Image 1 (cartoon, rainbow, N blue to C red):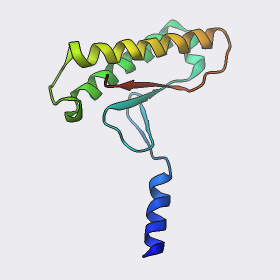
Image 2: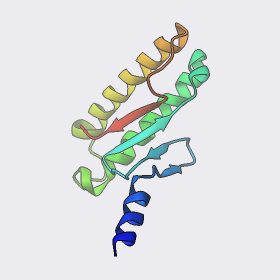
Image 3: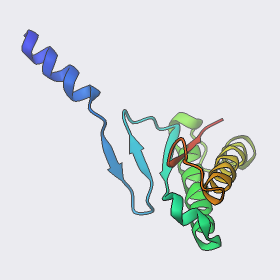
Image 4: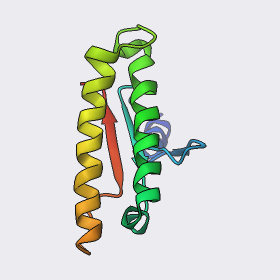
Length: 115
């Protein structure tokens, strides 16, 4: 019994990585109200890379806001998507400034979450 509990505890503490087609990475326990959108710092030095990241952040905001845990409405622009985008785009802007200044980023993902 103790071994089973120990094995379960170890398995639950190992980060789980799942990658979606658009480069979105979910780390750790799955939280339907948060989606981590990964990026390469070098990609943020070009307008094309920034635009790609913004598109992926937008898609992530729509996905988290469509989840039943976010209220169950198919598309809640005013109360969910817009605030999630504002926060996500602010994170993108900070990451771009850091990348263009040659500074190391604290993280290489944008946390898109239900607000």
